[in-house]
Image 1 (cartoon, rainbow, N blue to C red):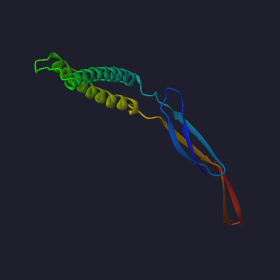
Image 2: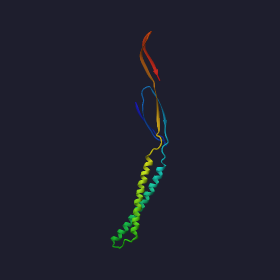
Image 3: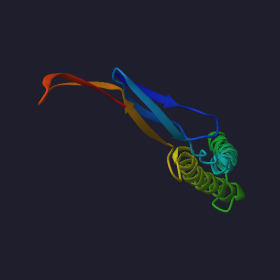
Image 4: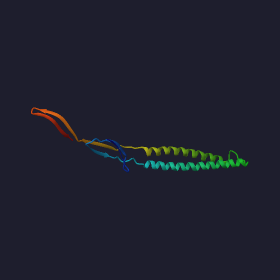
Length: 153
């Protein structure tokens, strides 16, 4: 019979293995679970990611507010020229927002890397099998013959 096992323990790397068991088998398992990889770098980069995303959203809202202010002036026939400070402020806010979205994307990639990686040695299992079996064989000797049996461990 085949069995599939998965061993899970908190703060340890998981272990999955298959085991074939036959009648009259005795199996000893020696299991070595390794410590799980720390998730602290993922928490740090995730925090940076969140901070960058919030900053990007704030600067996006500021740039959009400036754009709407300029559009309102145009719709109501208010004159402004290229020297209007709102144009430079809106452009600066849009550039900062775009850069922060880029930093957020990089931090997201790093967070996923730190979440999914498993450094170090994997957990392992050693299987020690002992089979209890009968061996029957015909035998002949100068004094006679017969069926001989042996029990093997």
